[in-house]
Image (cartoon, rainbow, N blue to C red; front, side):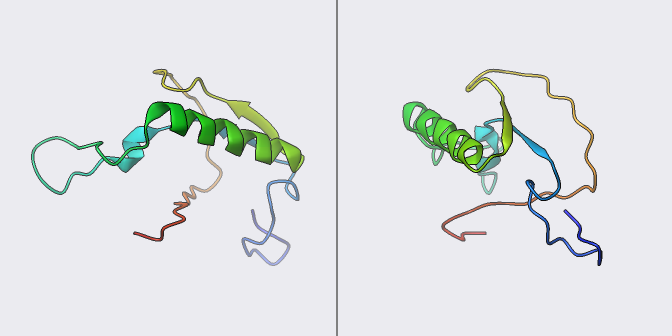
Length: 95
């Protein structure tokens, strides 16, 4: 979120924003070979749900208002992007 100088320096709390957290295992789809994506590297669902819930709770503990999608459910999500800005978070820095 932009500060007074137009730089992306503000947190979601600074901006008075909220989070809508929706799990999306298809982001890990590997399309490097074959005609369809492979999801073999996706996390096992029980463990993935624990991580998903843990992330949501960590954000709430920081004071961020969090809306959650339903884990492993097909959903229609409507939103208005102010940007657009997409950030890829990868703790392994594989991209």
